[in-house]
Amino acid sequence: MAERAVQVGVFLTHQQPAGRDPLRALDEQLQLLRAARDGGLDSVFAGQHHLPESFSHIQPLPWLARVAAEAGGMRIGTGIHLLALHNPVDTAESYAGLDVVAGGRSVFGVGLGYRETEYAAFGIDPRDKVRRFTGNLRIVRELWSGEDVHADLPWCRLDGVRATTLPASAPPVWMAANSDGAVRRAARLADTWMINPHATTATVRRQLGLFHDERARHGRGPLGELPLMREVYCAPTRERAVELARPFLGAKYEVYADWGQDRVLPGNESFRTGYDDLAADRFVIGTPEDCLAALLPWRDEIGVDHLVLRTDWAGMPVADALASLDLLCREVAPVLRAAPAARPEPAGGAADRAR
Image (tube, rainbow, N blue to C red):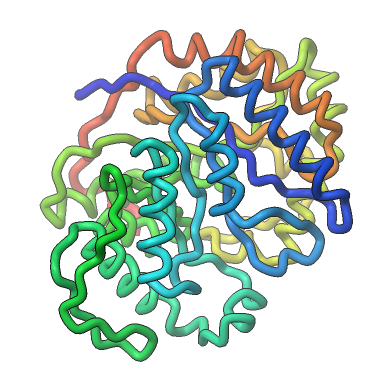
């Protein structure tokens, strides 16, 4: 098994209750960024939604450009850009610019998204989203290559154009995926699968078999990195961690249920359940020891080598988020990084057995 050093990052979506003072919210998010930077974390990620109704947040490009100014040597990434909704030329040029601003340390995280409201707002038929997504990803990558690019699509016509706005270094493409079909798509088209925080460990373990087998089936080379997002809250006692995290994390997943996030997961998973059932095998809430007990198997058994931890949810007082982040930086991240991640070789036939 190949081994790779482990990185630990933080997810700062900048998601806030609708109507909250945006300047105060920005200041608080920058406090979290500085704490993550000064605490030695390796990366910072932000996501994207349009018309989020219950929440508000700055779109990732202006937010991550602001983040890059204070992130030091941290990697800067999107988790995720809704690629099918946007023009690929604008995407390629904008995220090339972000990579330059970030000193060549950006990650281009992409995904389909799932909210009908967003597709309707952009005048896109959701039945066409996979075609748009794959076509846009091809165009973005070809534009970043600096070579001539051709496209004859209903939403984009290119006749041998060549981009002059290029990234400082080609950002790796991390693809979010929830369904089995999307996991296989990530194996074929992306540099890696950005494992979501919503699925249970059991679901992820099964889908990793699909992912590795699909890569092998298409002759893909060795996997460069395997990132995982998780909802994490750390406190001196388990009871205190649950007390502080539960109201805000539970409310977030109630909104996810309203949006239909659980409908894109495989099987019959539902977010319309009690918090304890929802948290089991999914959230990481407790003491530093509890957090390590939940996170180390991802490194040692599954081969995850980049853990992106979200410890701040809409409405949570910034002091509580900072307290969790402090423990994660001081007592959790150093242990996670103390040993390399084992990268299991693909288990032949796992995908076929799981079908």
